[in-house]
Each structure stands twice: as structure tokens, then as C-alpha cells.
Length: 249
Image 1: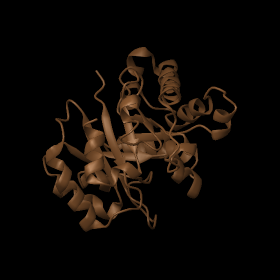
Image 2: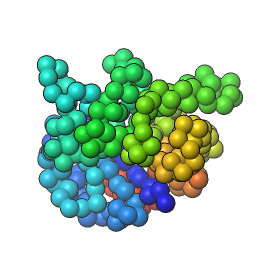
Image 3: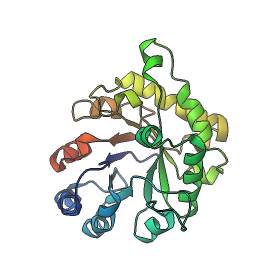
Image 4: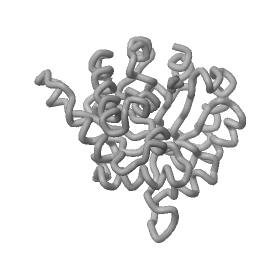
């Protein structure tokens, strides 16, 4: 049984004080983790204070990125080993903003996924399609090739510790969300791809999220879809009250 997850990605927003205040406002208002997982990915500077503020509450604190080396002369990068030692157990990898602004390739993301898993982190691997394919009414196929490349070489056990987020780049930060049927189609294709690679039993264990202009107005329709196991939320996760509305949809 896949436990659904509501995860927020703050991106480069909030300072330490704001982040800690947010955690304190929501941590005691969350459902048990065995019913619904709740998580927030904050800026690196905020992570350790957020972990301390969350304490033993159900709220999980995630990293927004990491490098594929544990240590070394990599100025400005974040070690997956150091993240785990700091109490971080989840990391977002392959977000379209990382691919676009920082030229991260599928090969780079694949290395990061393997490094995260080696260090005990559970990656949330993001993949998308193109607006062009949507406008012409074609099915989503590019998302499948992304998955093949990003999780290449993982074992059955490793892929079961990966969560995949289907995030159409044209829907991120634009206010234009995929409609529930479009979102479900993308998630279904991802699950079928995992099934082709690892078999039905493994594919049924992997959680697949939708992300892209998720709001309190559309979360119910998204969460009702069979192959959507949760959402990765951007702007709507910045406000404590709104985040709790999403959690208690």
C-alpha cells in the first residue's frame, strides 16, 4: 500500500527564522506519517534548524539538491553524506529549474540519485514533458526517456526507495496546471515504464507525484487519480495555513 505524500518545495525562499517559524506553526497539525507523509524542502542554510524545530513530529525535512560526491574540492556543493548525518533523509533531484538554469544532464542526475541512495537518502526524482507535445495533443513520451536515463542501473531494492515526481515544466510557477487527466496520464506512463524495467510488483511500490501549479483548488481532483500518490507543491507551500489546507484536503 503506497502512503500518499504532500511535499513542499520552497526553492530559494525564506531565511532561517522564517523557516523555523513555519515548521513550528504546522508540525502539530499534521496527520500520522503512516496515513499521509508530509515534507518540506527548504534552502540548505535552513535545513538543520528546521530539523531541530520539527523534532519528533511527522514533518520530514528535505534537501532541494545535492552533489554526487561525498566530499572533496567541489566549492559550493552539498554533500549527500553530510545531509544524512544532519538528519535529512529525502532530497529533490532533477528539478526542471536545475536542468534549465544549471544545465544538469540526465547523466548528472543519475549519478546524484545513486550517491543519494548510497548515503541513505531517498531521492524525489523530477521529470517533465514539453508544452509543445501538449499543445499538439500528443501523448507524453519524453517523460519516459527521462525516467529510463535518470534511474538507469538501479537495483529493485534501490528503485523502491525512489519517489518520482511528474512535473511538466510548462506548469511550474505559471499558474497553468495540467488538468487531472493529463497529470494522471503522465504518472501512469511513468509507472508503466517502471513496470517494464522492474516488473509490476516493484512498479506498484514506487510512489509517483504530480507537481506544477498545485493549489488548494485542484488538489482534490489530482489526489483522486489512481496513479497519483501525492503532490510536489511550489508557491502554495510557502504559507503555513495554505500548506495545512493542502495536507487536510
